[in-house]
Length: 340
Image (cartoon, rainbow, N blue to C red):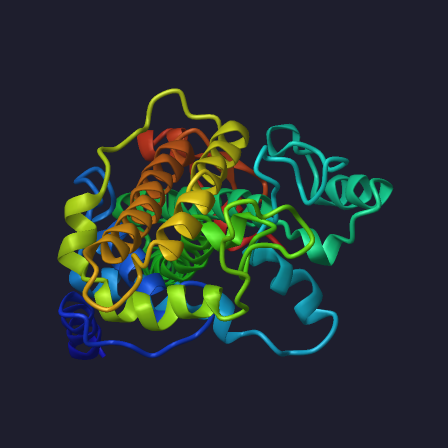
């Protein structure tokens, strides 16, 4: 298995994996996940800073697409998590929709507000909540791992120490899975078509003074075949932004990230009209690399921020503070193993 995972990284690095799914296609999602993990700083746990972990997150970043088609109610909540359709000014769907900067605290409140504005929830999407939910889950994962790791190192009872180790390894597998899921939705948020009412050709029900394409092939060709042909890991890594970790506020950062992508919608259509995605035109490839790098940069930062947030968390039942367990002033056994 380890050899397979390392080989997967190598194949991505040379552009050898071209299997397609939806939402960036397999290549794009793999590249974002791999690049983000490979860029993690030394403060992150050692099990994450390996080629095998990068490849695993890259593979698992495809999972939200691969699980589609399970029927209802499975698909209702999951399929609409991949996008949020905004107008050019950042309002959801229509002029009556809320600005993405004013999202309600709960997704249920978001759904209700859309319905009150005459907007179908299925049409609008709820990508920002998918990203926030994935981030918060990863914080909980990291908090649990911190407690298990610290307890395992200090525990003198062989039976308890063995259980801590087993549970830590279980948590590491869950962390990779949840990093992959978060990576998928952050990656979707870097794809301009996942943030706009012009998600597959310019919306035919809106003004189109520039004469942009209305082809229903626009979305799939861009994020699938074209991206698989031009995207390379080394180029994505070279284009990644410096970490932006100061002044973090999850509810402000996610809308800001999606608005940055929304701003690339019109440039995409202008570039398509100018032939920038034609064979041999470097402009289209540069656009893809920039978008993939934006997704990888944001994902790397959210991984690091989740790790840092987890240090101030409490976990288990009865709850224990991570900081106290790591300092050796609290015994987490009942909180982790259970007392029933």
